[in-house]
Length: 315
Length: 238
Ligand SMILES: Nc1ncnc2c1ncn2[C@@H]1O[C@H](COP(=O)(O)OP(=O)(O)OP(=O)(O)O)[C@@H](O)[C@H]1O
Ligand SMILES: [Mg+2]
Image (cartoon, rainbow over the protein chains, first blue to last red):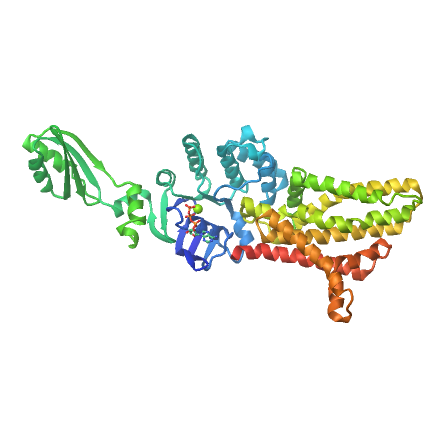
């Protein structure tokens, strides 16, 4: 385990912000820490990086305990905090030089390493510019370049795409995805699409507790049932009754528009009733013009886990 | 300690880009120049004038140093860069020392006008080297102590103004200890007088380098630097 959190707990005064969170991340994984505002993502990440001490529990990175060997831990991480704090009066290249020195990048390779990170993150066009005058997108790239400077084992990025325009969000996501080929990555986000796009594994955190830990795909399979949408012409009641009898269908919702009816067939997660529906329509001579298997999106999972009925139960 | 130079270098660069720092620089040069010119009355004795020039900082440093030191740590906390800083492999001690040295070098730049005045006096007539050298030693010891105090106050708050007011009040308080203890004997009064910086400063101007005074400045400076490092560590526990 490259990153290990063991019952990490954090109180702010009497307020329990993170409640006995445990997880492990293996080398090469790309993991998303997903949760609504105030769920405890930043607090968890700060405990992992050693910036904030845990009230209880332990964390280790690359085998070094965060509390016992903080400096060792810091050698293994590249961290971009929430809101990406930078020194506005410095020039981008100068800033990266300062950071490389702090991270102990040896003097003889420092220049090359900085150039490499500048190139990788697309900071080149603004490398000589004062950070305070950079656009948010470029500032984000400077932060990413900084996180990469020490060629860390683990990249920890707290909400790396927040406040960017859609194009920049896309670029940043692509960049992070490409970085994940060489580094283990932990990103926090409250954007589902982002976790779904970038991450191979998602930890959903809510009110300080991990409520789910799996691949995005498995999460939607496990947590919610699937559904088939079918559009069939004819008498809605008659068709609906027939569909309800199909093996595997749990519920039928019908919506009538002119001659065509749209049916939503709720099924168990791993059941596909499309073939049966097709045969049913063919048998009765009904015209069928759409037959789609929809799967629950991560959004549904998230919604269900963090707001509703499922919030208490571990899936 | 390998990271101290990097932090010092950044700190210095920031000083030379900071409007406040330039205000303090010019303010000090002006105020010192005016006070110095008061000594330029005939008959002009260069030794007396030099002693006066080195005495004046004891007033000017009290408002100047809080303004120079307030940003050292408050700014990092306020901008959030303390988080990137303290998640690189640097120790609290390195951060504190790096910032201390950076501020100290900038303060040395601030004293260049004083050096100019002394060079001017050298053209007026011969001067004793001893009191000059010990006087400068005293000035720098006092400056170092004030920076350590300012740095400590800067570790306590993210608001720069609050930091500068705290260290200003603390410095004034140290000066006023003398008034408190002026008339009384007894060990408490002796302790209060001992803590008062000007009490240790005067001898340096006379050309006396007393180890008791050296020990006082070294100890108090080290104590405040130590407290600053502790405050940096403890802020995590809030
Ligand atoms: N310094 C603090 N003092 C008191 N409470 C805090 C402090 N920092 C965070 N909290 C509280 O702890 C909880 C978790 O905060 P945290 O910043 O970890 O959430 P988050 O998941 O990162 O949220 P966001 O998506 O808004 O960044 C929140 O309820 C927050 O109000
Ligand atoms: Mg957060």
